[in-house]
Length: 244
Image 1 (tube, rainbow, N blue to C red):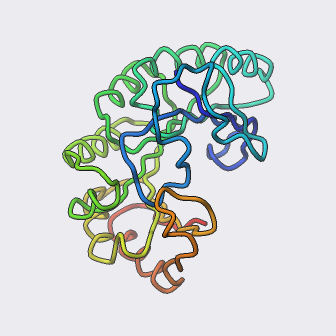
Image 2: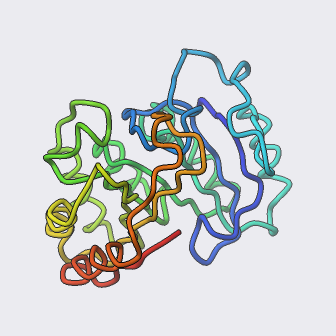
């Protein structure tokens, strides 16, 4: 596994759990508004020579061996581990990594962009994941702009289907960035995940570094507009709330 950082304790990343958060290096997308630009590149470096990445505010770069030593020391103190990124499902050894985490006794939450439905299916089949959070960037028409990549949108739809049918607790989430989506896009996304358990609409935070630095300081959607988006979502999903 190419590990870019570790947050040793989080009270908010895994609902109802005290968790550590593991950040992986590399991503299938290049979203202009990504909050973790240091985790997106994959320069082919080994896990022993990774950059510091998210090494601040309790986060640190760590080798896989060091990570498991840390997790062993947190038996009985933490409930779970969040595997985030970057995009974890692009790591070919993700199932083996998660199996090791499960053997220590931790529940696992996976953060994913849904670009690798075959990996999702394998993780669920092998019972290696306990909670899934999938980011939905935009509707099909806006996906290339929102991800910075040409991509087979059918894979996003397939991941949505797999997650909804998994029997696991899950959430979908969308960061609402002006210029990247509008009410029509929200309506299309809501229809795509129709019947889902929960969908969180996240306010865009422009006070942090993103891949596209021109977004720094960009005014987010108004509270009225966010509420309008949420109202659309509530027509399709069981729970649609605003975050951030």
